[in-house]
Image 1 (spheres, rainbow, N blue to C red):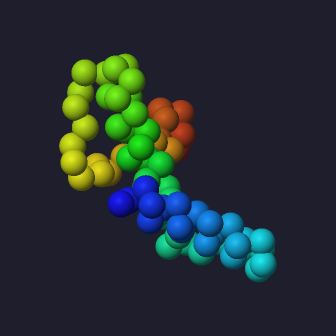
Image 2: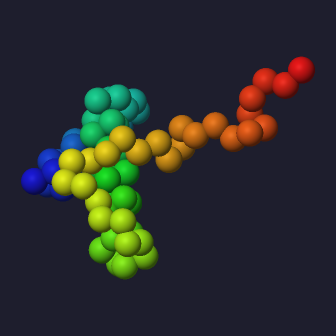
Length: 74
């Protein structure tokens, strides 16, 4: 169900970008959430991890982690 809804949002977002040249943030969050969840689950499906994913999509912060050298140093 989530996959079908995301596909509809992806096609709708594509048309909006094609016509107006802008993205809608709400659609971006839906698509991003699905891709993060799919990345989380696919590791288990292809047997690259033993950790079983939960039913609900977890909060995954792939690009939001700060590296050590990003901190302000004086």
